[in-house]
Image (tube, rainbow, N blue to C red; front, side):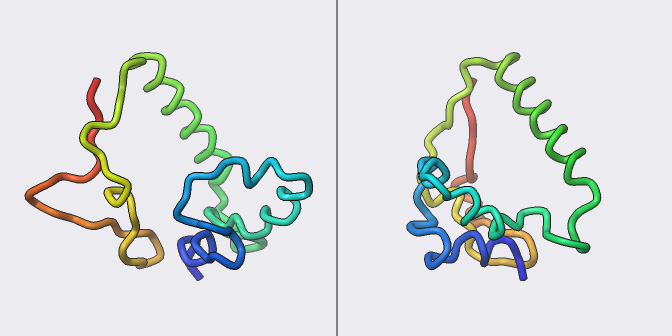
Length: 105
């Protein structure tokens, strides 16, 4: 099962399309929601490079934010980052007339 189906299930994550980091701050939420966070898989089939992937993500985001402190989304709409299909990884809408998420620095 793909992570997109699990992490967008409204019975597990209420309002899954809404950015709501507070859902993790409710007492006991981490213990309740953590088993359903399957971005890198779980158990014996878990990605062996999970720690390296997280380290690279932290490094890349920190470097981007330090080198380009004025980065902002450019003409972005909420549906620009909406997954419309799932082939083990989320596939986003493609429109030649209007590119997806863009940033302006």
